[in-house]
Every structure is written in structure tokens, then in C-alpha cells.
Length: 360
Length: 125
Image 1: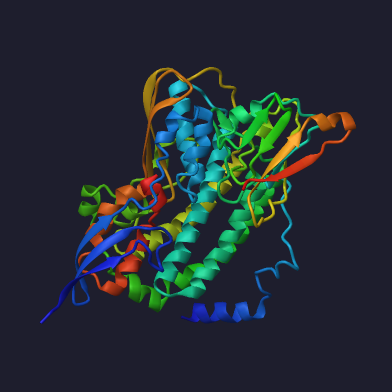
Image 2: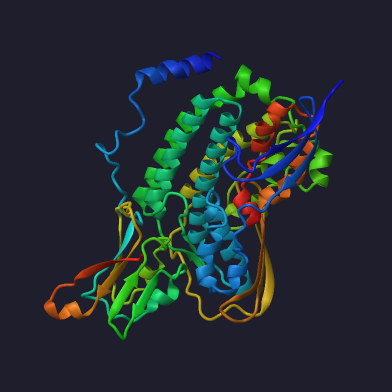
């Protein structure tokens, strides 16, 4: 006879870097139902839009999420640039691409470490964070900070990279690629990793579409949706194809992220080789006109959505942010029922959850 | 599995990746936004830094000729440095040192007459 019970998972749990609470209804060792609860780190950042002016808000939205901070600032600035009809210089667009792709690499490497940690593979955790440190150095040298780099302003970027820095970036990125080639085999051709990930948490293509999954979760289920293909910033001038895997299990989502690191390395090389010269920002005069605007950007975790309503003053009337993790939680709730209790941490980490993003 | 063994053997032969801190310290990059300093000899207390600061950590008191700064609220974005008309604000590349209690930095302008800016540190408690 099987026993049923309810096990609370989180908000404090060794594998969770941030608080999310899941109530797991289990029958013996098998999860039958899941009820989520969020709201432990709500900071009310959207309301701050009424108190900080549009330029100060850039530094607030960057703090919605530490790991994809640069892309939050970029989405916000792109929205206001569209509303104010600003045409930003091409060099600023290419610089934004370089910083965004560096952020994607460091986010995916951070995820890989946490994911390895969730199934007890400490060595892989340390190896991937060792590689990530090189990316952090690149961010610090080019932008001045390790994580929240604050390079975006409305009308362009704040810092330029000279030729010697660009050459150094190419050199470092080759080193990262070399380091990564050893790590790749540890993930993709490893018996233990495959045992814990292949066939676990399968999300079919139809379900992923129906539940509105975004980013690597959707691409791991065979949906070729990558917002970079819409050509914002300088992505229209760069050559790339969305990374897609068909299986829809934990393993294919891991493969998508690892292949995306290589894709980002390639995009950085292309951006450096096509880097135009010229100004890095345009001067902005006056307040934005009355209106509303939507801006979307492909972050490392998926699609981020900004809705901005302006009132003609220096303050925004409404700022609404939908982050990728928020869109991926329904997909997670679909993956969990039917899995073993011991696989729950692995499945949660596989959507790359960012709870402070979700709650803002 | 063979890949793992190769990685283990290679790592055994390599030097540690970590530094023996605090004996061996990491060098700061030239552009690093470490901590904010104000040269009171150049400052004219115009108050632009206070207006543009996203975290409201700078207070300019013109009546008492005082420039106040809370280093624990500062997010080191560097906007004040970019907007400073007299270039008196500067970001130093060294990180702010840890402290056992919170304090405010208060710089007085009157010391200009003595030919040297004097920094006064007052406890918040």
C-alpha cells in the first residue's frame, strides 16, 4: 500500500540560491502534484518608477536581476529610445551585443555549476565557475564592475572599448573556448550526468507552446524561438541560427545551454570583427513624449518583456516587467508530476530559476 | 568517464587557481569602479551629484558648506562622476574596505582656506 503525504520544498533549500516554495504531494517517492508559492523576495521595483526619473531608473531595473542585469538595462533603454525616436550609433549597438553575449556566457556557466551541484557533481561546479571567472574579469576590465556593469544609457552606452581591449577580448574568449572543450565532455559524455538527466522532466513541443515556455526551455523542446533573430541592437547584422534540441528532457536543455555558450563566443568574434567606428552615444534632450511602448530582449534565461507608459514628465507612469522565469514556472509545474522526489532539485534547476527576477 | 580521469590528472599537475589571500592580492583593473572620492579643493557644492544619484546617497548642504556621502548606500554607478562639472568627484579603482560599523563621509568646504581639504568621519549611530 502506498503512502501519500505533502512535503514542503523551499523556500530555504540547499540547492536553491533563491527562495521559491513548492508544496509537493507525494505518493511514496513519486511526486503527484505541485503547488507553487512565490513572494519571498518582492521588492516593489516597478513602483519605484514613479519616484526615480527615467535616467535613474536604468540603475534600478539593472538590479531586478544580477545575472542578466546588462540585458535588463538594455531592454529598458531600447524601449525609451523607440518611444523618443532616437537612432543610436552603430558602434553602441555592437558594444551592447558584446556585453550581452558576455553576460549570456557567464549566466550559462553559473547555471551549469549550480545544475551540477544539484545532482552532487561538485567537481563540475568548481570547474565551470573557474571558467566563469575569466568572463567576470573581461566585464570588469571593459565596464568597471563584475556583475552589475551599468553600461547602458538612453541613447547609447557609457564606455567604449579601444582596439587593444578588443584584441584582449578575442584572446581571452579563445582561452575560454579552450577551457570549455574539456568541460563539455564532462557534461555531455558522462555516464552519471546522463543517468540523472536523460528522459527526466520531459516537456513536449505542444506543451511548451501551450504553456508559453521561453528561452532554453522552449528551445530544448524543439521550438526554434530566439528573439535575437528579430534583429534588435546589432543582431540583424550578425549571422546565427537558434540552437534547438528536440527531446525536451533535462539533458537536451543542458545541451542547448552549452551549445549557446559556443554560439555566444562566435557572436562576440563576429561583433568584434564587424565593429564600426564612431560615436558611442547620442545626446538626449527633454522628457519622453506621452505614449506607451513594448520592448522584448532575449536574455540568457529567455524572453524578457517590458511595458512602459510615459506621462510626458521625467517620471514613468507605469513600468511592467515580465521576466523569463515567470514564464517558465508553468512549464516547471508540468514537468514535476510523475518524477522521483530525488529528481526535484535537478528539474527545478533545469529551468534556470531566477526568483528575484520573477518577483521584482 | 575517461574525460573525467584526464581532467583529474591534469588538475593534479596544475598550480591552484585560487589566490592565497590576503598574502597575495588581486590587482585592480584600471577602470574598476571601486570607491568614490571627492576633492574638496575643486568642489563648488553645485549639487548636481545629489540630483542625479539613483540611490540618494549624496547630500549637499550649501548653507553649512558640507558635502555628505553614505558609502554603504552608494551603488557605484559612477553617474555623479560623469556629470561633475568641476571634475572633483573621482572613482578610485580599489574596492571599499570592509568596516565594523556604518559611517558617513562628511567633507567641509571651509577647510579650503587652510589650503588643504580635511575629511571628517562621523558615526551614524
